[in-house]
Image 1 (cartoon, protein in one colour):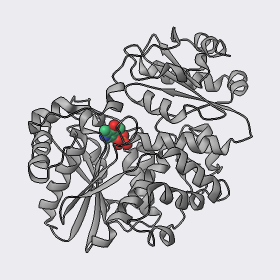
Image 2 (cartoon, rainbow, N blue to C red):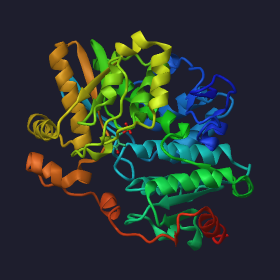
Image 3 (cartoon, rainbow, N blue to C red):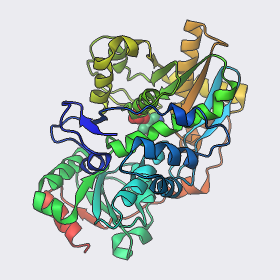
Length: 436
Ligand SMILES: *Cc1c(COP(=O)(O)O)cnc(C)c1O
């Protein structure tokens, strides 16, 4: 599979080049330039197939010429010591739990694959230093994915504020390969510094520097795998259509679902489940997208006013606007309905949902009611965050006190960066150089 920019059909990039560049030179985003039909694989897999088996089977075909089946098995096994988990609630609904990774959010799936595949693609072939802007649990997710990987050094730039959950024994200063640096500045300063470092060609080439933020195709593409996985787990009990409801902020997860559909996944549609930040719904319905000011909600990961994947979604709609209109349905859920849905999921199904997953469940229920397709369509709700991460809200909604798993408890432990610097390129380059 080759990649191109959303802004041009030429040139084409290999997966490795696209991952190492992160962004195409023209300022667009990388998208697949052709999509292989994968039906022959996952139509014959069934509920006995494990997640790493599925990835090991699908990845070499997707990345033909770059990842052979042996390499793909190594990548799948070393990336995934956790699996998605499909839980069928009734005839109409299932939950796809994507929060079993090290930081309890679905983003662990992309980070884990990216780190493992980069190690494999660079094997015996040099080193790479991956710069990422980090806040919240993203830093931990990346650190867990990259720690101990040969030939890879992960530099994480944190804005001012607290840093949690890092293990100092994995830092370069202690013989590891992780470099957390705190910038006296904002998240935007971190992003800007990454761009400046990459553009300082002599420095970037000395360390072979690249970036791994969420729009890297190496994090996005592997998210398509768990849609295929949900299908092979549920297909035996499907009698009608299949819909996925996706809590959407930057729309990476939804786009990964659309890729799965392009690979041949027999899916009826996707629900783009938003909270009150729902301006993007206008675009999905065929109107213009006019960003609106941000509203703070109880599902903060969906509080996004301009989705970073906008150009990727636009590319889908430009290609086939009528098809897309019948494929993606927007939903918008208030804080109050989010809480009510968390309560309902607990009372009716004995299932604890975090607020983001509850937004997806509520949007699915609203659509099912308005379209009246009960019994004809099965909807898979993507549960993107571990309920224990929002324990207070879950307790408020359900009355249930959650026991926080030990690994998530450790995320709350304060960490110190190895350097605290001003938001300037020479300070950052100095801090990196002093590690070696
Ligand atoms: C990041 C995140 C989302 C939103 O995913 P996008 O790919 O940005 O749409 C949803 N839920 C949780 C818990 C998240 O962390």
